[in-house]
Every structure is written in C-alpha cells, then in structure tokens.
Length: 73
Image 1 (cartoon, rainbow, N blue to C red):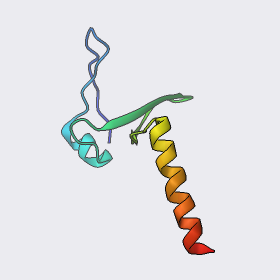
Image 2: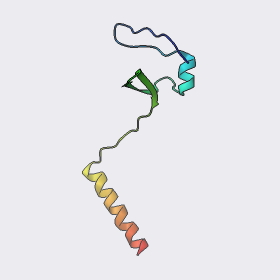
Image 3: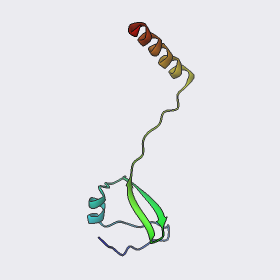
Image 4: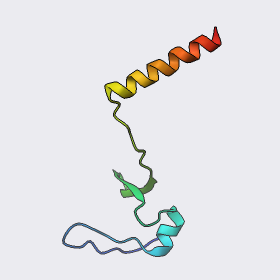
C-alpha cells in the first residue's frame, strides 16, 4: 500500500485509516520509524510498562523466594 502524506509544521503526519488497520495500529498505538537505504521504514511497535523496585518491594521478593525455597527443599 502506498500513500502520499503531508508533514505539518510540527513534523506530524497522519497515516490513512486503511494503513493503520493494515499495521494493526489503533488510537494511541506505537510505531517504530527508522531510516533505511530506501527511505523511512514504519513498523508497528509496542511499549511495556516498567516498574522501578523500591527497597521495600525488593524485600518482598526476597521474602517470597525464601518462603518458596522452604517448600522446595
């Protein structure tokens, strides 16, 4: 599928609905843009939430692992 897209003053472009459907990208979806020899390549992307563990949370993990070791030995 080919489309001519217009870049606005903020550098934003809009993918046509049919192209978004083909890529499986919904509202708020992520797209990876990378340069290649042929130009710009757009691919569907995903983002995973991360958790930065506090000392309290790490202590919870340690306690659960210690409890698990008791049951496995």
